[in-house]
Image 1 (tube, rainbow, N blue to C red):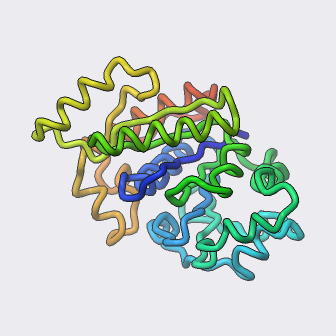
Image 2 (image 1 turned 90 degrees about the vertical axis):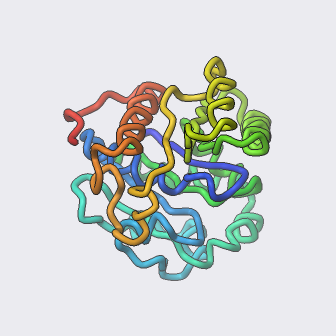
Length: 254
C-alpha cells in the first residue's frame, strides 16, 4: 500500500481538486484506492456525493479502539472508497495531542488496511501542526500544489522544511496549480521552476471544469476528460505513480 498526502501550508491552492481527481485516476488505473478527507470543510467528501459526517467524530475515529474500516464508505466508482470528513476534524490537533505518540496515530490506523488497498490518498487541511506531523509519518509521498505566486512558492519552502525536519528523505513533489499562462507573472514562475527538481513536469491550469466540481459533484477528469486540466491531472498521476513505484494495473481510461 502506498500513501500519498496532498498537503500545503496554505489553503485555496487546488489541493482538494487534486486529491479528488487523482483518487479516481488511481482507481481507474486498476488500483484499489481509498480517499481520506482530513479537511473539516469536507469538500472532497462533497465531490463524491457523501455526507461529511463520521459517527463519534474525530475523537472516536482517532481513538484507536475501532478499525478505520468501520468508517469507510463505498463510492459509486469501482475500486474507490471514501473515508469522509467531519466538522469535528477542526479539533484534530487537540485530539492527537492527548495521544502518547501523536505523530504515529495515522500510520497505526492505516496499517490494517495494507492488504485491502493499493493506494491511500490523504486530502489534508492546510497548515503545519501535529496533524501534518502524523501525515508525514504515514506517507510515502508528499504532494504539494502551488499557485504561481511568490508567496506561495515561499510556503512551499516552509512545507518542505517542515517535512524534512520530521522525516528526512521522504519523497516530496510540488506542482503548479491554477495556472493562467495569459498572466506574465505566471509565465515567469513557470520558467523559474522549470529546472527545480522539486516540481512535477505537469502543471494544472485554471479551469471552469474544476470549479464546477462542487456543483456537479463529478471529478473533472470524468466530467470533461479532454479539458486541459483533466489532461494535466492524468500527466500528474503518471508522475506520482512513478515516484511511488506503482505499476498501473489497467490501461488508463479517458
